[in-house]
Length: 369
Length: 266
Image 1: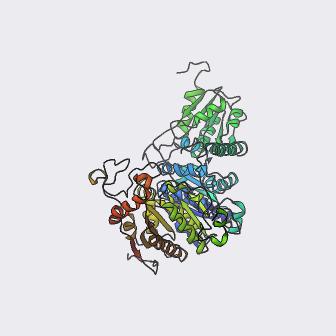
Image 2 (image 1 turned 90 degrees about the vertical axis):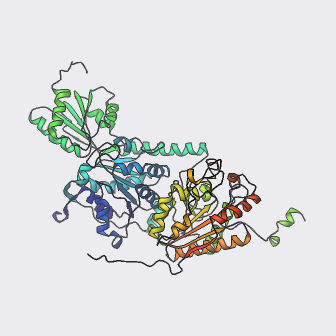
Image 3 (image 1 turned 135 degrees about the vertical axis):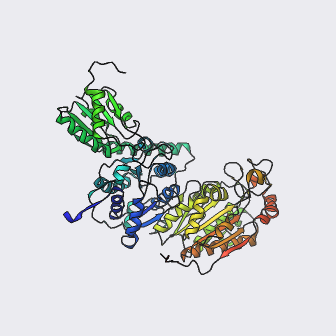
């Protein structure tokens, strides 16, 4: 086991895990802070070992459309980028969702808006969880907080994506992408055979082979409104299933908590330090870390918040997930946001200060400002 | 002769290709798409590629190509067909992938994907119908609209000072090292149809033999967009389009691409 422990960056772990998952193809374009995904894949040359295709595309627009083309043939394909690049991919992601294609998209977030900064951020929460592209669709959104989770969520993302025939996204932040940590990589799995692909994806455009007489057409276009509404209803049924089955989160110190922190990704770990410091001072703080940002753990947060005096939502942005946290508790508990922007990651003291300022030092009957 | 007598098998002299469906075609009378669809279907059938062909449909009039030609299809976002084809081809090297696009789709919004698929030398067939207009959206100017041509967005005729020059996309991709075969054809006469079919066949053969990217431009008519009868459209095309877009092979490297590995000196 010890031999399997490696030290690497989160971005490198994504690349290594993709090869080991038996991913069929990666299509990407360089952008800081995620370029190590493509760099690692090119250096590993998986086309020599597993047969995985790796291609540096001419743009993020081309990357996501290559993913679309590959996914339409039933292959397990992925791309990765960072915020501005993922904005460019939104049209393609909408097409993937509408054509019910499995695919994995990795966003190692940097600060925006615009060209913004190359430093870490979580400001694409809305884009990832509320749509991003046009039309009524959802993405399965996984938020890793460790390099280990970067590796693990590649297979989880692909598996969920194939199970529900809908694209999934790993929404990492620049911290998790760039930091180095110990990681145990998954075992090498073989890529699926052509027979397995045809069994798993009878809808795929593979050429009318194996005696198939009816042609397969992968499209998101339907001009008959009655049929298009039926298609949309089918998508929504899938999303309901995912909401029912796939909510994932981590809860710590919630049993006796007087205050609750909700945070995802790298900042959740910094919050853990703040929580431990608070507990040393006798202030009981707990944390819910959503692992799936969609489907969002509304019930878990509502239950954990039943006996708390306040919830602090800590995000590396101006306050985006806080809207879902408020929905979870229907504003029955005061919910405040703390975050930094522009690529600045809050430290534990700032988080603890925010807890004190918003809740601990505030008399229970104090007027809202 | 009654209808029943006429449709007896022994009287049959012609039928639609086996791989063209019985679906009602949405193309306007006089449109070139129907003929080119027929040629693609015939070539796939004659070359025995029914179980290998994967078509990539565009956005534009031929968006519904998948309703007519009986092979597997993937419908692309506007302009992105070459990107889809790149992945479909690389991930399925034993298949034959072709794109079917119009000039608005390929030469405007899809120009980057076109240039890069061609310069990478993807082993695909690219077919572009150039009728110099956006037909589906109601006859707007395209990059390939010839100078002087009146469209919905160049109502007084295309002018270089306002709209720049027509994009001769075949000549551009012929300059790229990744293309092995670039030709400009038409389908307005029986002779032209035969030549176009041979070109399409050659392109599919190149893809099978992995010789690089084959690019076929077919100068076609858009009677509705041009606001001319089908007969007058053909005449207008010959008189006005062909001088700008002369027919014939632009590039043909029968050997295919040479793989190059260059060691750069330190």
